[in-house]
Length: 253
Length: 253
DNA sequence: GTAGAAGTTGACGTTACGGAAAGCACAAGC
DNA sequence: GCTTGTGCTTTCCGTAACGTCAACTTCTAC
Image 1 (cartoon, chains in turn cyan, yellow, brown, purple):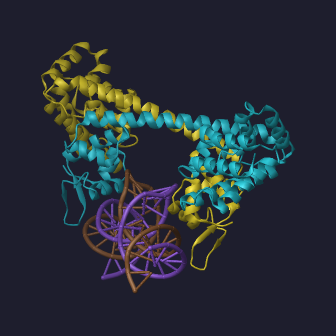
Image 2 (cartoon, rainbow over the protein chains, first blue to last red):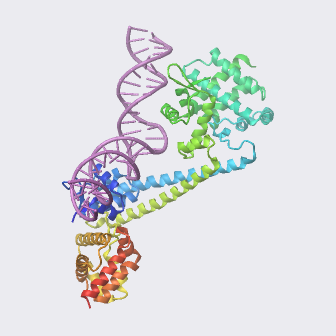
Image 3 (spheres, rainbow over the protein chains, first blue to last red):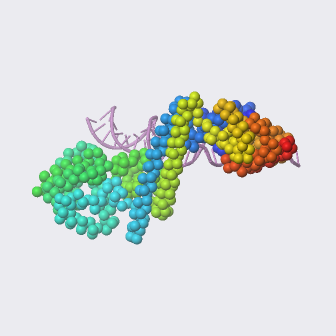
C-alpha cells in the first residue's frame, strides 16, 4: 500500500508543501519515487511522521526532532532542556506583559496633559537622566541647595527639560570621546566641558569645590548615575569624577 | 553636533549593523550623509532611536514601531493589543511546558520496559486508535464480548498491536477514498473493505447484525472515534457507519 | 608609504514553511 | 486529436531582525 503525498497530507493534517519540505531537509523521505517523480509513502513513513508531529506539537525544532529520531540524543534530556526553555520564555513574556501594562497605565494617566502621544519620558532615555532623580542623592548632604534645584526644575517646561537632557547626553558623549582618546582630565578641552557642566548646575545652585567634587563622586557611587555613564562607555563615571575633581581643585575654593 | 554611526551605537547599545538596518527599512534615517558616504546622526535621531528601543524592549515589531512613531496608529491601542498577544503566548507556553512535563514523566515511567525510546504510543497516533479505548464504549452493551476482546488484546505484543493499528489506519484511508469518489456503500469494493473490518473484529469476538450496526453507530456517536474518522476526512464516520449497516443487512443476521 | 581603524555596500544565513510560477503526466469529454 | 482539469513536480521569493563575512574605500597615524 503506497500513499501519494496528498493522501498523507489528508491523513496527517499537514500540507503537501510541508511533506516536501521534510523530504528536502532529510527529515522524512518517501519510501520510493515513481517514474513520474511522484513521492510515495509507506506505513513506516507514516509512523515516523506521527512521531515528528508529536514532537513538533511539543514545540521542538525540526533539527532537534531529527536528532531525537535518529537516536543521536536522548529524548528525555532533550525534552527536559526544552521544557526549561519554555518556562524561561513564559516567564519573560509574563514580565514583559506587566511592563507593557504599566506603560499603558502611565500613558493613560498622562492622557489629559496636552503632551499625549509622547513616549520619551526621562526615565526611558538611555542616560536615565531625570531632574527629579538628579537632586535626590544630593539632598541628604546639601538639603538647602537641593531644594533650590528642585524649585528650578519646577520652573522648566517639558520641552526645556528635554532640551537640557539632550544637552547633557551630548556632553556625556563628548566626555566619552575624550576618555577614549586617553585625553588627560586636566586637558583644556576636557576642562572646558566640565566648566560648561558647572555652569549648568549653577542655574540651579552654586556648589563650592568640595560640593562639586562630592557631586562627581556621586556619579561613581550612585547606581543609577553610574549606570547612565557606564552605558555610554566603560569607566566614564570615574573619568567624569576625576575631571570634576581637577576642575574643582583648579578653579573653585 | 553630528555623531558617527559608531558613536550612536556606543551611546544606544545597539550595533552599527542594526542602525544600518533601521536606515535600510526607513525606520531611522541619519540626519545627513557625508561626501564619503558615512552616516551622521543628530539629536532628533537619537531621540527617535530612544523611542524605538523603548518600544522594541516591550516586544513590538519594527513595523508596528514605525506605525506608532509615524502617528499612523494609536500607541495605547497598539500596546493593549500587544499585551493581549503577550499574555496569550505566555499561556500557550505554560500549557506546552505542562504537556512536555507530562510526556517526560510518561517516558520515565516506561523506562524500565525494553521499549524505551519509543514515542508513538497509541494515543498519539492521528487516528487515536487504541485497543483499550476500542472496547470501552461497547462494554456496556455487550460486556461478555468486550471481555473477550480485552483478553485478545492482552495476548498481542506491542509490535502486533502497532501493525493492527496501521492496518486499521490504512483501511480508514481506503474508505475515505471511496467516499471521496462518491462510491455507494453497497458497492462490492466498499463491502469488501467492511468484510475485512468484520473479520478483524471476529478475531476478538463475533458481533451479530445488530451488534455490528451498533458498532458502526458508535463510530459516529463516540467523540474519540468520530474525531479519528473526521480527522481523515469529513463525513467519514457516517460513511463507515452506513457501509457497516449495509453489510450487516446483507450478510449478517 | 603603509598599516590600521572605521566606514560603506552587497550577499548569504537563520526557522519552517506559504505561495506563486511554470511545466509534466494522465484521464475524461468533445 | 484536442482541450480541459487534476495532481504532481521543481524552483524561487518572502517572512523578522538582524549576524556575519567579504570586498572595497577613506582617513589617520607612525
